Length: 109
Image (cartoon, rainbow, N blue to C red):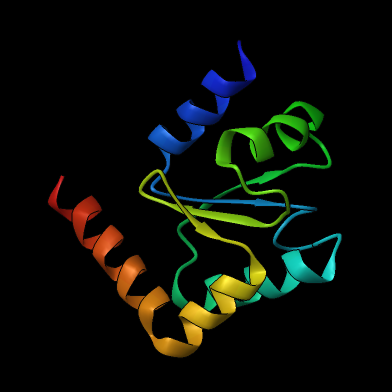
């Protein structure tokens, strides 16, 4: 499967996707650890991809998203951002609002 189609399918199949280095239980970088810690405050219902185990995604996702670094948080097929933006959105309450809106849409289906 073409890697761009693979990314699009992951985003289509999962309303909250986090592309990280490592896993939620064993993050391999501090930025991924912090982003997972923050996201986990609001939901445990998310899909993740360990870009260290999926080299094709690690190489092509920055081209697809026009975002050069990891982690990357996506909600409803929209790039939210990396660790700094996740932190800012959490501090402002906006991340909670985005996740609640996303979960409300899932419950309506």
